[in-house]
Image (cartoon, rainbow, N blue to C red):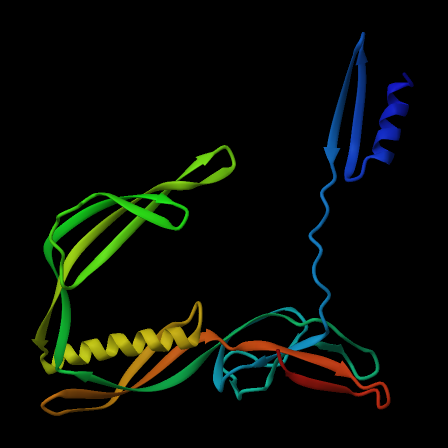
Length: 264
């Protein structure tokens, strides 16, 4: 064998993804220690871009990781306004970057909700039956639960178990099914109960539309009306949410001026 130091150098040179190799020889025993190199995650190439406003809003928070912030907190912006510019520097010496950061703002949503005073509610009767099936592929054979009462309206909860051997999932197993009888009762809501249901429904719809991380900061009831069957609410919500999206910066070779494409 060569000198341990020479062996370590050759192994380091010939083994891909290795940053260090140590070799020691003890009699007829050779110990080799290998340290793998850690490569930084390769980020996808991205075009220079701005971050622009997705809504008419008042900016509540802005953080520019890359790029030049154009607006400040408490500034009113319109949809399409540049929030963080991907062009940095001055007119004589400028360059484009991939703008990155986070911008939040207060956005207003107006909702109209109608809630019926007659409310149908699902109720479990307490009657339950359980079944077990032997499963092969996509076929199931019932092995327990024969002769039990069937329900006109019910909900079924199924839990399937499959057999595994090492890393293989076998196409056989069993399934447990729990069947619960349900019925529906009709209740007459008070106007106050209908208003609360309408508020909950509108809040859920607003947060779903506003996106992840949104928070309702204020709500106001603009009007309400009622008749014998329904209660109608007109509501205004103030929501703090993310208000930015990307917009590519593309240069036109002939003029040397940048053009902004639609958001993507």
